[in-house]
Image 1 (cartoon, rainbow, N blue to C red):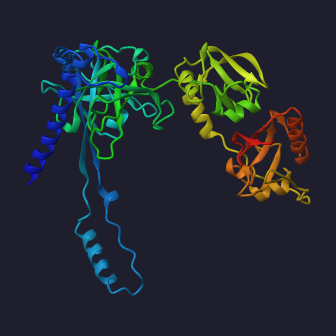
Image 2: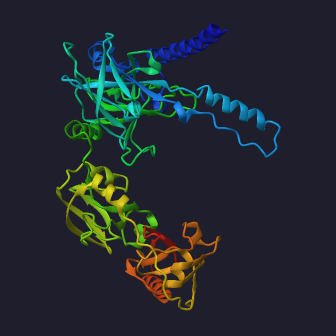
Image 3: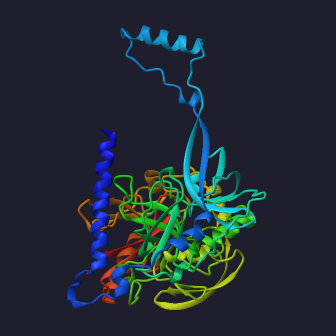
Length: 505
């Protein structure tokens, strides 16, 4: 039955392949009357020579990990008092412990792909292929198997670098290409180890570029329809010159198999990470020390910008590179080191690619005007440690003045930020000034923007507010200026800043 089922699946695949070949070789009617050239109808020339040249540079990565032991013990069930099964389970588990029958540790193995980037023995793969592995081996196309050492890995980009001692074996390294030159429709070749079958070649095109699949802070994937399956992770995506333009890392697949949507880390992003891992054993990314959010059309209008672009600075990290006032909350970063910042996603990537300690020119929109500032970058990894170490001071008890009068505005009740409100909403002393939001109508525009009781209005239209009347006056001034939106800088109870806009016309 199993063989019949397999034959049926193969038959269907063969049928589809034959149909596709027929359509390609005989020509396809194209809407609009466009005629396809003979080369376009036939597809690319044979990639046999290219595959033969590259396949020995691609390796299979096998890992093993020890799991089990006490962590895998079956827990003693919690039964109601007086249960007739209580005595039975007590006897069973006590005997198991006496007889040493606890589950033993065992080896779990996994497979992935990788490729040689330096003939001295440097191999690149995905971080998730070797994560938590006790032992890693590299298997070559000719059957050679060599143990590998992990010299560096980066979970943020899912890249890992291995080192092997090739001994007398001659390794064939493959070069990186320029992924920025890749265009949608370019032919690409993937080689890897799908389902542990060994060196497998598939071909397709670049389906899209710059894909964000929410897997990390630097998502900028190349999407391809070249068949990528489980086990292809860490393998290379080649252009037709035999250059690596991507590292295959993820697929979208409800069934677990290829449906023609695979993602590769672009070589332009991977190269700098690999160089750092080889040189330092860790990443050393540039760090600006700001918290950012997207610039929406409403925010752009409230800031007097003609179009929504750049990255809005929602907060500045204390002790960070720009904690000197060079960049302020409310600034919109539109250029960084000569590169245009079209949207929020682009800023973390371009900053991370910059050397630590470099002085860069940054262009910001501040209160409607362009300003140039110079910034010396810190190191992201140091900033992350600093953020983890920072903690807000514990609130101290103080005198409790009587509650102040509240103001109703756009479905919000506003009050002065005094000790009473601090205690009521557990607002940290890191939030020094502002107007606290005490209530939010669930049917209001404020609720639709995610505004919640306990948040503090710090600024409106980039002007500080400290009383409910300040908020009312700021809104009135914006209306006089014919503004339709008001930009609120809001602080969370712990001091995290964000921006929100409310319609005021």
